[in-house]
Amino acid sequence: LKTPQPIMYSDTVQPMCIASVPLPDEHACIMGVVTKGGLMTLRHVQMLYESDCEPLAEGLSSYLCAKVKEIDAEVGETLGLDPSMDIYPFSAPLDFDINGVKAGSLENPLFCLTNEHPTWSVYGFALNAYNVTDPESPILFSDVSSDLTAIKEHSDISYQQWTQAMLKLKDFLYYEDSNIDVGFYRKIVDFVDLTMFKTKVQMKFIMQYTSCPRSKKMSQDDVLYSCPLNDDSEFFRCTAVVSLRYEYDVLMQCKRSSTYCETNSIYDCSPPMFEEADSMMLRAANQIFFDDLRIGKGKFKRVLAIVEETYEKRSVTMKIKYQETSCTVGSDNMLIVDDVYSDRCPVENLSGTCEVYISFHDPAECYSQCTSPAPLINTP
Image (cartoon, rainbow, N blue to C red):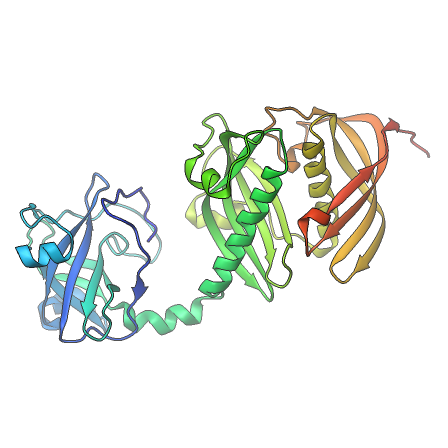
């Protein structure tokens, strides 16, 4: 459940499935209500006949209708609530603007428990009400079970594929961070968009440095849940292409950004999907940047060209030419690969060559071996 403003929950947050069948006669339903202060509370509701909400339905072929009712002691204890709590007033939905979505439809979900499905499920979202300040007012809810077919038809990626790609991306970031002693751990703070391409998932997300130094070895869970974000760090708008075919195949590129991306501009929010012809240059640049950080000293190298490539089933070996930049690897480093290829890191008159080995099976096998830089000789 993604909302435009943060929501504070007073109980454990758990995943909840969308109901796959219409609401049966035997049921118990509650509604999550978000107040203007951002606090979600629960209201016990009584389901009404569809005719009670017909004037609000605006020609909808399928919908639900309910009203808020008092929470008695027995129901309150079942829900884990204090039965003496004040359940009124029914707060108006938060103001937000999302194309094609009515106000309130994301803030006020309808949860029901039935004999046929003895776990709480989502049956709808509040769309409208005669009077939001009157708890007796009939409330119009969408019927999400009737939308389930359309949801599946328009979903180009399964939950399992999304989970697999997300875990691979997080494992990729943690592997790099945990094998470097300079700079700070990174954390994904928001996912913006994802698209399925055959056996690859393209993910757009927002990343930020934390205040936890990489020199302090931490578990992945500690980084995710215990490391505060670095207030002085900018946001990074990133695109990653994650392969579902190979164990270790993540191609990532990020750019600096001082603000979050708007929802309606996700395609301008992060770098475009990498062209196949450029992907090896990016892989080489990422590996050399990672190895520069892993060595922890010297200056960052910029890839100029790939001189030679050798492909195998699960790996590629490249010979590249590089030019040294003026940016020094340091313990307080908050640079990203894109910085090395920008005016932030001007190149110097020193160059060399590297052998870069990329394994799609085991990240520990990846490496780059570079010659010492020498004065760059320009030939006509």
